[in-house]
Length: 138
Image (tube, rainbow, N blue to C red; front, side):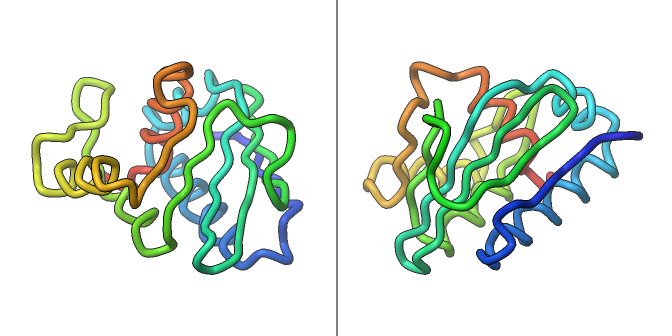
């Protein structure tokens, strides 16, 4: 399995968590590698509670992590550090996030309460789905 992740946001400790999570997920799963190799787009994660924001630039088989919110991301996830980690627990079934178990209902609850905001979730569903698959440890 060959893929490339470059972290240009090394001054942001959260970037290493995302880098390691994605590296491990992709390295362990041929299905996730296939998704990674098809993913093209820009996603940002903004965590105001820890004053951290990173942008992930996916270019079919490579990922560059940049500090801050840059390159006009199609998807911007804004939440707290604690809640963003709940996204990693989503199960994937039939190639889609599964919202009908405890982890899925928790994420839906965060969305409905406004504690989790995802800009672009309706305009860029394919990128959001790919990102969710890659981030999920399940």
